[in-house]
Image (cartoon, helix red, strand yellow):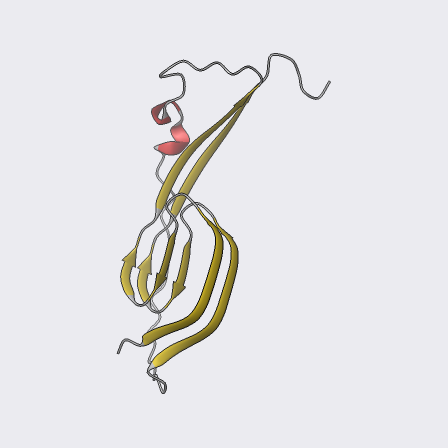
Length: 123
């Protein structure tokens, strides 16, 4: 049995990059995000200089996830989820904010930070 989700107020300051906010039920949520963050001292950029395919971390498979199914018998005495207030500062890459039921969630975020300096910034 699905329940009704009721949220009186919700305030989110920042929601970025493949994030999901959902009030209500969902069967499947699969947010995914890839990011290349390049920081350099000189603002020059050549097309094709940084491509996702150049970095194995973006194509490497994750190790197999091992899980155990646990049978659960739930009795919902109240047919609704009531939330008075939600205050969120930030929801980052591939994150999920949920009020309700979800059968399956699979999130993935891969971020590569590259810093390029002509001189050592720590000298």
